[in-house]
Image (cartoon, rainbow, N blue to C red; front, side, top):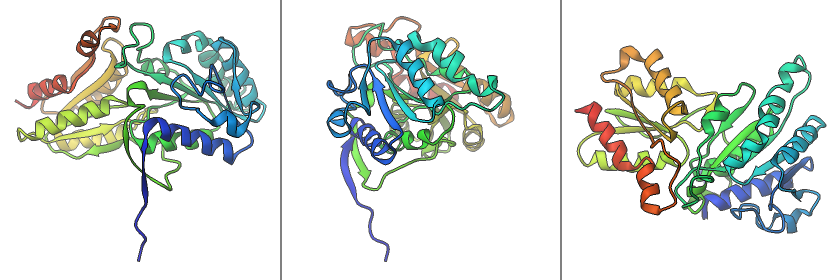
Length: 330
């Protein structure tokens, strides 16, 4: 008799912390660095308690200079250790864009395959927490545009817990986008949860009438929309991209082949966003499977407002997804 799987109540934040704890405990080459990751426990309390457990040589508070500490981590990775960089919020990563794009992502190519950069960069992304125009960006598409990077976005407790472990064994840079609005999300997680696959998208809900494609927090927006649509007899399949570069096109296209309609939901702005790439790929590779044009739902093209009702109005909501589905299913 196979024993029943045991689970415990946890949150997305705690799952991220346990992933960090396991990484630090399991490999002496791993260390965490970033602004306020040590004594303060991280700007979003993800690394709380790790300084006390692993000490200041493994959990390192850095100066307020993203370019400097990301550059230091790149050098350390090239030297044979396994740094995990925490960037407070995604907008601050722009201060390290040259290091990430021109150094971390290119050394393997520039060295003729001789120099790997086994670096993991974690950053908080997204809106929905009243952090206003300067701290509410979704720049996943910016990094997914860059050859040499793997870009992932955990939407579930399992992925929040396990993506880091898989990223750390990748010989090349991995960028993990952790959505701020998901941090308090609670649920049950298997006690033996560990490393997860990073190569495949996941079907989070099966359906027959339309495919909803998204990532991060907007996966849950799609699941809520699917529930509402089901009450009206419309069966929506929800695909969680999980890895944004490289995209798992076979899973996306297989879903569209079953449902014959697709809506891409992206928290980034519509123009030039990752959603545009996914929509284009569906149109290019699944054109003859489609019974309607590919629909898109994205954030309004405005700086994210501070006022909570205006912020909600700017972001993709379940009602927006439902309306987009009705437009292609009618």
